Image 1: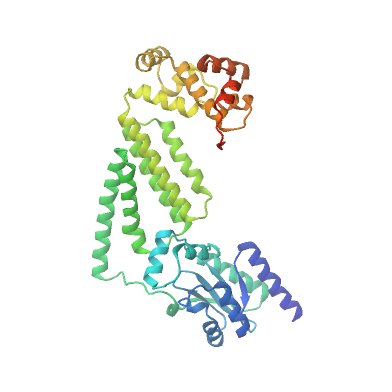
Image 2: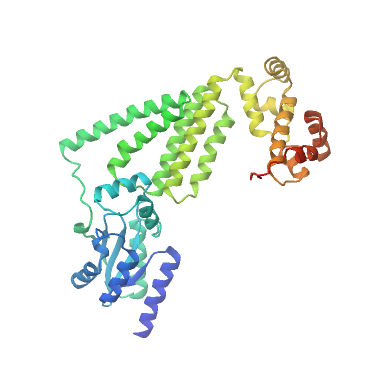
Length: 405
C-alpha cells in the first residue's frame, strides 16, 4: 500500500509539472476547503465549493470520470480511484477575450468582480482541451492501477450552462439571418479595406466576430483564433493584390502576423495582432490610392524603403520590379528627380540619423544596419548628404531622452 500511495503521489506531481494542472485528492472537509480556497473566485462556481465536492464524493459512481464545467467555463474532472476521490483541474478548454469576459460577467450577474481581475484569475489555469484532459486522467488511472476496469466518461449536465436547442425552426431561421448578416459585413469589410479605411474595416471585423462567433459561444480555442487570423490574412492579401500593391509588401505585412500568432497562447494578443494587420494593410492601400506617382515608381519606393538595409544595386531593383534598367532610370528621374541609387542613399542616411540620435550603436554598427558594410564609405556618404560626419551629427543632435530601437 505504501508503494501504491507513492506511485499516486509521484504520478500526480509529474502531471502537475508537465501540464501545469492540478490533480489532488478531496477526501475530507479540510481538503475540500483547501481546493475551494485555491480555485474559487465567486459563489456561482458551485462545483468548486467544499460542500459540493463532498456531496459528489459521497454519490459518485466508481469507474466513471465526470466532466464538470462552471459558469466561467472552467472545467474539472472527478473520479474515484482506490477509495480516493480525485479532482483534476481546473483547466480552460476555451480561451476568452475581454469581450467574452464582459459578456460572461454581465450574464452571470456577478458583482464586485472586474473584467481585468476575472481575466487575471483565468490566466492561472492552463489551456487544455477536454480530449487531452481525458487522455491524461485515463493514463494516470492505468499507471496507478493497471488492473482497474475501463472508466466511462460522462458529463454532469446539472453543472453545465444550458444551451438552446438549435433544431427548432426558429433557430434555423436565426442561423440563416446570421449568415446573411455575416455576408453583408464581410462585403463591407472588403470595401473598407480596398478604400484604405482602417477605422471602418475594424468596425466590420468586430461585427463579423460578434454576429457569429460571440453569439454561438463565449470563448474559442487557440487553434480557432489562428484559423480566423489566416482567413483574415487571405482576405487582406486578395484586397491588396486587387489594388495593385507589390507582392513583397503583401508578403511582409501578412508574414508579420503569421510570425506573431504562430506560437502565441493568449487570445487577446492574437486578436490585437489581427487588428494591427488590418490597420497596416489599410494604411498601405490608402498610401497607394493617394500617392502621386505611377504604379512602377510607387512600387520602387516601397521596395527601397523596406529593403534599405540590404546590399542593393540597380540590377537588384530592376529584377525585383521586372522592369528594364533604362526604363526605370528614365521614369525615376522624371517623377522623383533623382536616380534610384541616390534615393536609396537618402533613405539610408535618414535612418542612420535616427540611430545616431536615438541609440548608442557604434558608427560601424549603424553603417551595417543601413546596408553600407564599409564604414569609411558610409562616413563619406553621410558627409555628402548632411555636410558633417556622423560623429559630429550625433554630438549636435543627440536627444536628452534616449530612444530604444
